[in-house]
Length: 109
Image: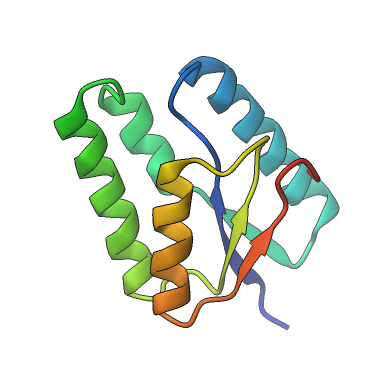
């Protein structure tokens, strides 16, 4: 039985370091408690290598995310964190347009 690739959408803007720490906690929890789910967080590299506060760099990161989703790389998209940000909404919209199921786990992981 193969694993399900779940794109883990999470808020980044605002307190970036706290949001990344929460994202790491969630990814660890998924890895340890959901053996058939592979958490996929491709934007993490963009966030740590570019400045999310610079509009052009943030836009490039979101463009990268939308491209991955549009190519149907993930099997599912999970909305996580405390709220659904504008970036997460764009990711969810792209997933739905590509026929990828979207699950709302905000405030649940």
